[in-house]
Image (cartoon, rainbow, N blue to C red; front, side):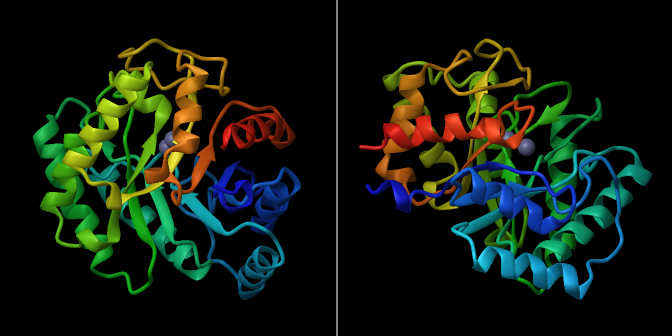
Amino acid sequence: MKVKDILLGAHTSISGGLYKAIEEGEQIGCTAIQIFTKSSRSWFTSKLTLKEIEKFKETQKKSNIKIIVAHTSYLINLGSPNKDTEKKSINSLQQELTRCELLNIPYLVLHPGAHLKSGEELCLKKIAENLDLILKESTGKTMILLENTAGQGTNIGYKFEHLKQIRDMAKEKNKLGVCLDTCHVFSSGYDISSPEGYEKVITEFKKIIGLKNLKVIHLNDSKTELNSKKDRHENIGKGKIPLKIFNLIMNDKRLFKIPKILETPVNNFLEYKPELDLLKSMVK
Ligand SMILES: [Zn+2]
Ligand SMILES: [Zn+2]
């Protein structure tokens, strides 16, 4: 494997303009980045202008960033038992999907949802139905990726089976993929702390979801223990997941073409650089 062919990067900031996230990524040697296409803490935003779209596409063209992934806002809950929240979530996700299509972003990562004590089965069903509602209207190429979760609170998506169930129930399967977060894998109880454990988890993922449906990997270490059901990201090598597991991931031929994105805690985007360099240095 050649280091320059690896799709590796980090979640960068759009403050000051969407294109700024690409410039940040370029500055620290990314070949892939993840962004929020709007504030992660607001439901809606104003429409993209032609100028914004052009500037974004132009900046990417001139950069080494081969793939840009988007992440939805944290407010969206397609499985909410509250009708008002559910409706707002559908409309908000619709707007985010449209933004991605306009910006030529192929993947939009989404946390499946939380049942807020209304029950997992009902929540899974709602999510599948609402995804269909949104996806059947979309004419673009952007796929929605369901991200596995740590299982904090009443969040679903902490088992591969949840992600499979949603995809199975949805009609628009071809527009639904999966994003795997290593911190969430570990804190939801999949033991990837040894090479044997890692292999077992990959095999299980293959069997339940299929590697062809895995489109993005979030590379994060975990501040908390195995099965803690907490979502606390840590810098690579500083948490509970052994460094050798990240080495395995970086050299796993089955995962070679899948974009790998850091969402580790940093005060400034420049702090991603040593982590990226460490990961690159592992590639044999
Ligand atoms: Zn996420
Ligand atoms: Zn993540």
